[in-house]
Length: 105
Image (tube, rainbow, N blue to C red):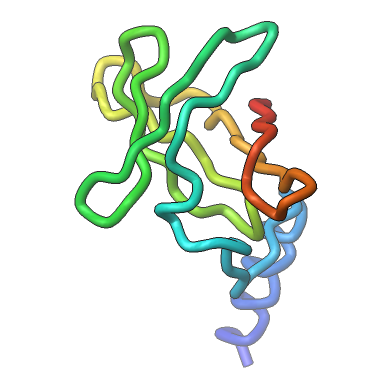
């Protein structure tokens, strides 16, 4: 009974951040690779490396971990810069159903 209560509390905590469990991106990861332009952040290039998505943003190496649906958390790889809130990358599909606009939060 205690384990079930602990699991329910953990689920509630995760749901409070809006995380939807057991989702997949709408495209293969390789389809998200490319250069995206943002008026506030400039250009960011996302590439595939070792089966995952990576990038370099403002000279900082990041890895994109799937969060849910077409959202990914940008994980800073430099241990000296880790510890802050993750930056969430949200991909939207263009009219041809390709990931095109990128929103960073």
